[in-house]
Length: 324
Ligand code: F6P
Image (cartoon, rainbow, N blue to C red; front, side):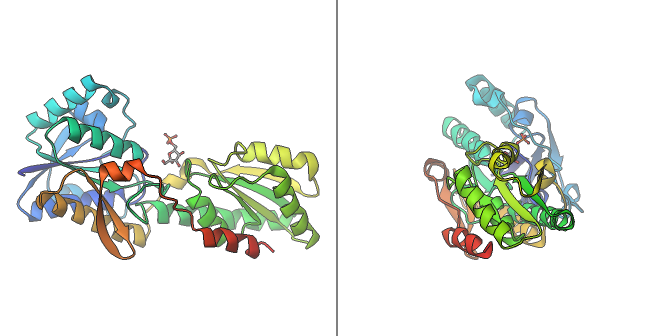
């Protein structure tokens, strides 16, 4: 390997910059050249790349977003798109790739490295914490802290007005952010995609809480919950339960921004370092992960084929008891 291409793809996540920095510096330390690819797979197709030095990644470890930009690229899903991408990365002299992103990024990497002779190692970067082969993804810790900060602020105003708030949080089909932030924010109920909670069941929980004279109530609704989002849940609850003035707050993309937490910076740095070392050892078509405190690798095919249940079942139970 002479030149490693680094890119971020899919939804951005705080800590991606720390992973880029670690991958770039580890490669340079080992005498390799590095090309930064803008906008993920889109940049390969459009030939949007630049030579990276150690200075290209100065003072980025503390920044949210991704300095390499990102995109969800439809053209890369076509054979023609991938052929164009391969032609451009070869022209740039790139002979290995570090891909930082989520599920879609991994899928693209798996197909590309199967079709073409280009080793790829992936790094899990997404706030959703929904990837296999790792306990944690880059950005998840920061997003949790952002959500908890928002819940705390909403709790202040909710308690002052004796209101019931429905707060919708991100996570796609995963309830990890909702569960974690719900427990840390003392939510009265948490609706998760992995658990079906009927509206009547939720109303029962809220009635019990109301009986205990709670001055405010917060229900965390994961965006993937089957009841169809916080606004819908609030409307349906209100038809039968109207003791409290009700408000809805959809936190949205603010959950993706902000300076990465210390935990995300360290995780991303370890993953960027490990990804390059795996490439240099001759490894290919794997994703980096953390299990306990150890860095591990999992074949991409395996990481994409099974669905690991990431939700902590104990915490689901504890959350219910804490709302008592
Ligand atoms: O995967 C990260 C994520 O923020 C999800 O939580 C959310 O469902 C999705 O991306 C939003 O995507 P977009 O920024 O393209 O609207």
